[in-house]
Length: 624
Image (tube, rainbow, N blue to C red; front, side):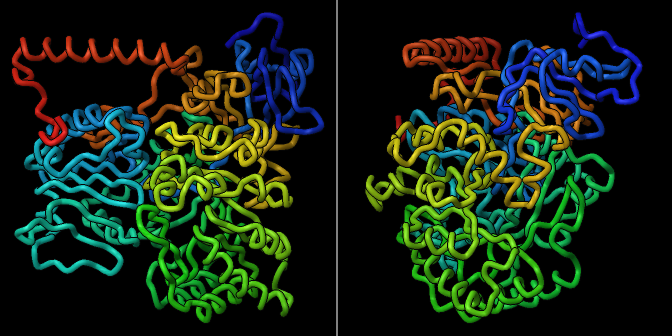
């Protein structure tokens, strides 16, 4: 936008983008604060004030007046299933941010009415029953009422899935269907499935059932991925480390991001991992991939970062906190072969490890290989999750040159964890402060999209407050971090995990021009309002990829969401309020207004024959 006092002048060194009149937090210890910056050819050119950027404002420079808003380095989710999430984004009804089950069911009913025959309505992660005013899951009866004929699949964390009758029929579950290993199909007295699937404790029953749903074609998957990446840009995300995951096959399921990268259409920098999919052939998969690709193959937009988060299926400790910790069989022999193969070929890796019992067993393997000189060997490796990691285990990780990546899974599952292990254990789950005190690199992320929401500000709120979505205070001040540290975990530390800390994670001349102008000042907004922060302008490599408020229309144009019945086309993604919540009294006032407006709207619909006289009929009578 044109700004008085900054006169464009011809220059061979003109910037592509200038941001001024800003409160810039650079993350750079040598200059943590600034008022303006300039980006040229994808890199930061100048950091300073208006006078410093004035000489590089040319006739073609886009000058953005931040209007005094807070600017931060672009966020980097260090553990997110962005590739898998992108392939299905436009097919999913998101309950992320929805504050009541009643609202969620109303959305579901509306979506079922527009979903064509043969397609499903699917709610796949990003929410917890604790975020609802009702503090409960939907029942199969409520799903049947909302969608009598359209298959509905609702996933709740790694714990359970609820299906309606139409979905049970679509997946073929009957009284004769056996329970899979580690899972349970809940049945009624007549032996027929009642619509509830339980991870007991393995989530494979949930994922294998979801895998039976219709898929998008290749071009539609690319379009879906584009929209998902722009949804992440909405929150100021400019980078992500993809943790692969179940049912994410290489190279087939990586084709969408690979082609988008080749076309120069990615709006998020992605470093990805490779995850063996078939138990028993993990070593064959890893050996084949070692011949196909090398770590750091690619460029600043898409690059291989190593293997994981599973190397062998037998070593995976499923983290359904509603169930006891799984007792793993002997897995060390094959696991050692996998780690040796990777290290001898210069590959780093990341490991899913929820419980200290698993971490200790993995470390024993690493220490055996360390005796041969393979640890530390210059290859980046880390543990993910680590909710119950012990001080001794953290000391051993540090000695072996490892790092940590933590996610806010406890903000979604903290109540279940507390019921099983107690508040004392929950206070240290995971022991973030102990990790940092040992000098470990500790990066932060979400583990979205099938567990936590992809909203990074929900994760940042958990880091600084220790509170769950339901408001339960789990982590005492001694295991929390301040806002500056939390932001560093979401920027600099993520860059370190991909070996890019010399070019990414802070705003300094020569570093990537990745930044976000925020709706509210992260450093001063009340703590309870941190989850409601978004970006009004997101820049990746000097390219404006998201623009709202005064900047609307400045971002790259995005094609319309297809198919036209997509939940995203009608509801969007994360269901966030327009402004932060403010005080508790103000919340109550706004809730009362919303209830009144909802009832007036219902009466309006009844008068016009658009709704039945007796109400929505969405609630299971047991809960009336």
